[in-house]
Each structure stands twice: as C-alpha cells, then as structure tokens.
Length: 133
Length: 98
Image (cartoon, rainbow over all chains, first blue to last red; front, side, top):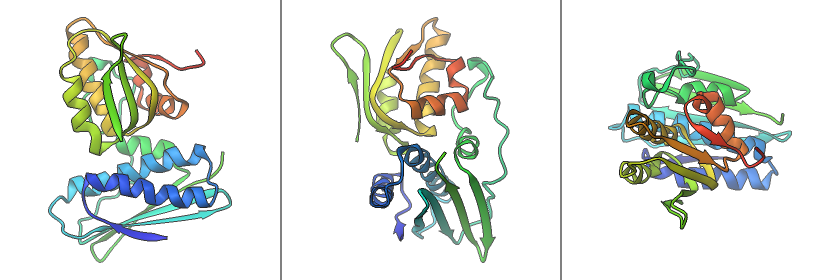
C-alpha cells in the first residue's frame, strides 16, 4: 500500500497510524514494528529536514511478506543523498565529546536487514527490509 | 501522544511516543530541570534519535553541574536504541528485569 504524506514532522502520527494498520492486518510482530517505526521516522524526517522548501509530498509504501516488511520512501525533485553510506559515529565517546544529532543513519543501519538507495530524475528512493529474527 | 510531567515522588514520568514532532515539548520541560532526577520510562513506548538528542542535551548540562539523570523502567526496544547509541555508557539506565 502507498500513501503520500505532507512534508512536516506533524505527519509522523499519521505515518505511524498508516503503517500500524498494515502491520496489524498482517500480524507483523512487535520485534519488527518498533524498528520499522524508528527507521521510517528517521528517513522521513531527514527528507523534511534537508529539503524544507520542497512543496512535494513524500511517498511512503509499505508491503508485508512472510512475517517481514518492505518499506519504501520516495522524495521528489531533490538532490542526491545516499543514506546507505554510513556516517562515522563515536558511540563510545565520553559525554563531554558528544553532541546531539548525527545518530539517525547509524541507528538505521543497526535496525534493518537491508537498506537500498536509488536516485534517478531527481527522485530519491530509499527501501528497507526487516524480517522476523 | 507524548506526555511528560513530575510524578508524586519527584520522578519525571514520560509516556507515549517521543518522536521528532514531540521533541520541542520534551526539551522545554527538560530545560527547566536543574538537579539530579529519575526519568521513569515505564509508559514510554517509543523514542527516536530526535528524542535521544533531548536526553543528551539535558544530560550534558546536568553533568557539567555535577548531577545527572537516571533512567528507569526502560523497555527492550528503547534499551536496544540506547545500546546502539552508546547511551548506556553515559546514563545510569535500569531495565525492568534488572
């Protein structure tokens, strides 16, 4: 199923509700739902944050199969930004050296089974999968 | 829906989902915290990296003044987020089973 969402943090509640309805209908387990919500939020808010003046909505697609999920987010008329390139994050750094922000992409890589990025015709598409443990 | 408030015992009780849309509310509350506090996460279902930013900013400020936050009743999902982030090394965290 696919649905477009307004480019705003305020869309998050509607996004979670949309995905959760699908997960519930297909009996997707809790161990998948939490990371799915987390990764959807990180990817969506990145799209909002880095292209705040873009008037296009963001397309979210959610599919289920064999107890797992495949989620795809598509952003239109944007520059390329490959989220599969993991950022270096010092998670063992003492608190004095920590700064808020920058953890999102690192955490995405920890939570998904696969993460793919495609860019063509100024269209960014990110796809991730998560299956039962 | 995210809620944050003081409980009867002075602990800070968080409930619901701390996502990017709720961080302004959480940060405004935490900015007024000036002493060591316990955060009760027993009713907090979800946290995103934006929520982690609120916790980190608050902890950095409190540690500089010689205090800090202790987080209790962390569910398994949020515990994993803390572990992947290295937050278990900069916060005193207690899970329900420990």
